[in-house]
Length: 429
Image 1: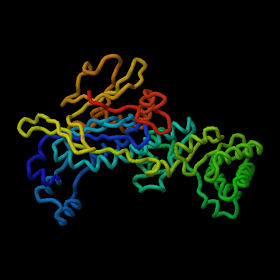
Image 2: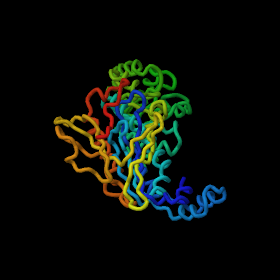
Image 3: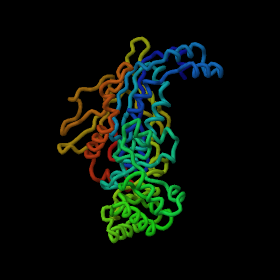
Image 4: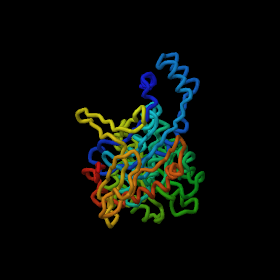
C-alpha cells in the first residue's frame, strides 16, 4: 500500500486513522485499555535499518523510491488516546493517529498487535480482580505464551490490579513486584518432601511458600509444618495447592494447619484459575491465588478485536479533512475524526459515551447539559514527540487508579461476571 501510495501521491495527504472495536468479546460488559505505554516506546524505536532495507530490496517487496523513504522514516504525526486503565466499549475511539497517509498506514500492525494483546489481558485481569474480592493475585502465565508476550502480559495484569508477577524480566523492566513458589520438580528431586521443604526454607527463609500437593496434600502439610518447626517457626509462610478440588482441599488444609498450630500459615491456590473459578472460591479459606493459563491465553483473554480504520483524509490542495467510511455490509464504519466524552450524572455515574465529529476538539459547551462529562482522549504524541501525558500513560500506579475510578463510574450490573450486554456504547452526537 505504501509503495502504491507514494507512486499515486496520496502518501503525503493528511490522514486520520482510528482504533476501535465493533463489539466486546461475547458476554463482556466492559473492556480495559492497556498497552499504550508500550506502544509509545515502540513508536519511538520504529525504524528501518540496513538489514531490513536490504531484505526488502533483495526480495523486491517495494521499489527503490520507497526504500529511500523508509530509510528516512520517523513518525512525525499526532496520537490521541484513551490512557491506560480507562474502560472502553463498542465504537470507543481508543486511539487516533493523525499524520500523512504514508506515515500512518505503516503503523497498523504495530498498533494493533500491541493494543489487542495488552488490552485482552487487562480486560480479563480486571474481571479476575473483581472475582477475587480483595485477595492477593499473582500473575503466573509466562510458560503459556511467547517469551516476549509473557512480559507484556505481566505488565497488563498488574495494571488491571494483580499484585505481582512470577516473571522476573517483567519485574526488572517495569519495576513490578515479583513472587513465586517452587515447582513439583524441586520436591521430586529430593528424597522426600521434608528434605525438599527444609532446603527451601534454609535458602529462602521461613516466609517462603511450600508446594504441598506433589504426592498427598495432608502428608505434604505435615512435612511442611515439621520442617518449619525444626527451624523455630510454627509453620511456613504459606502453602500452595495446585490440583484437585481447591475449595475442599483449602478447607481441609486450614483445619489441619490450625490443628498443628500453624495458624499464621497462609494458603495459596493455583491450577487453571479464571474469574469463574475465583468466584467459586469466595467462601474458601484461600489467602491468595496464582493465575496463569486462563489469564494469558485466548480461552480466558479473547482478543479485544480492535481494528485500525481510515476515517478522514485531507484535500490535496487545501489539506481540509473530509470524512471517509466503508459501506460494506456488516463492516461499515463511521467516517470523520471523532472526539469522545464519558457522560456522567449528578452522582458521577456513567450514563453514556458521546462522540462528536470535528477536526479539532469541541468545546465543553457542546456536551449536553444535565450532568457532566469528561474527555476520554489525551494527546500522547505531538509532532512525533511524546507529551507529558505520554509519561502518565506509562505509570502503572496511575493506570490502576484510573481503572478504579472508571469502574466506579459503572453500575453494579456492569461489574457482574455473568454474560451481559456492554454497559455503554459510544454513539455519535
